[in-house]
Length: 630
Image (cartoon, rainbow, N blue to C red; front, side, top):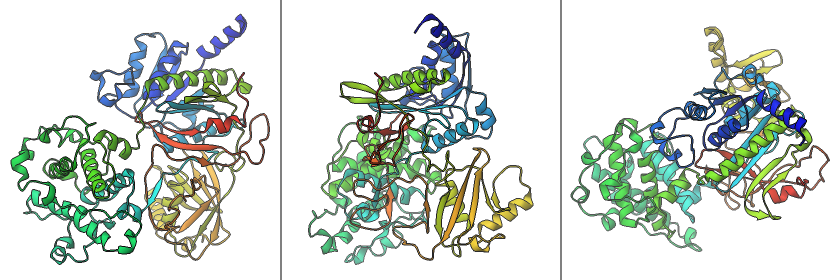
């Protein structure tokens, strides 16, 4: 690069206005690198506050910052060594209304380091609407990648399928677990939810033992605790029901165990002392703080090391003690709790429950540290990977500012060398003509228009699948539904009334052949949905009662469908594994050439404890289709 080119590059850097979304593991490294590279005007959006667990890799933060805004503290830290540049922080959700298309239009480039796919899709759509280039990134462990998305020149973030969560049939979870992750899903999504979440939810934990007449009274409402019921006895009742009676009920089906190892029922009297209070003290001695997430059963039991492997007795004691603590210290939350990997007591309970179940089914036990990683879908972060990826983001951002499209690269950071490379740059692809976000391809919705309500369409399709925050639904010139703060009471009442009507009963009836227009005014996204009436749906395979085609749903992987195993078609429980298998996505074309028909890409979805979710493409597969930078 000659002197003139260097001057032009420095000028483009110093004159650029950059938006960073996310100030976590990658964000801290990115802000530092941007400042040291000469960028003068940087804006940061992040809704999170600093936690102790962030401090081992988010180096702009210190212990004294715990509880404070990540965006603000990161700004203050960088201004200490670059005091003359402009950094503006926003402690807010990027999906808030103030961050609209006009807000995004003021920036030259947007750099993402977000913590969920929904927010990533939101930013992608705003960048498309504002015609602002987007540089995406993600890390998980030693793996990382950086991708460039420029409207009309490269694919957008949603041009390709994003992996769906790994799912398991309920039968596997409740009756025939073979992996520890099955036990975690059972403990987290069924048992924890039943005990501490919505009491009215249906799940398979209320099975009665076939030949346990004495237990029939207990199982009438086994999870409901009477006001005068002793907490120790209640804990033992739950223990005996889920680890004893329910296992006996499963064993009664001899056909199930012909080719499987039979599980062992476990009862509290076999592993627990008669009086827990004499051994452990009482929950009154718990040194709980005002922060409910710090309440812990481990200190009461003399357990200090989360990487220690607990035996059956220790797991049983933790199970009972954690349950007692929920009722003693967090009773007001019971009935509304959901599992949170940052909730210490919840992690202890789920770990203990999963290990007791694993012991019953002959599955190796895991430490609390390992169980938390599985339950929270965690791959532990590596600070060096974050730093490498942050540097790659800045490199691509500079290319974008110079409008050097021929040199854009998607770069992969590998754990092991491939073709003697740990960093593999490959050319980006052009937009996918079938993408409903950037190519406006119509979607097809199969639905029973006489039975399904407009509410079903809004909840199951528009919000859940299309990711729209402020949807507007039109049929021809008729406005069927709208969300917004500027609606008067009459309009709100009309739209709410429409929600409870079947599609065919709406003021402008939606029937076979109807075309709906669905918009999100905040994202400035609009798409067409062609409606196809269908009478019947398979309740097991199509539980939503409607099927959307053209939406980028993940296809089947490794011989398994997205919602069922390859040998049992039944309702499934979702769980994202940190090492989900590769999936084959649709064909893509490079910017510079058309790809062969049989070219496909593999992706896998992973999440780090840095809270950056990413889509890892298989770089070896991609490199067969793309020229690397010489």
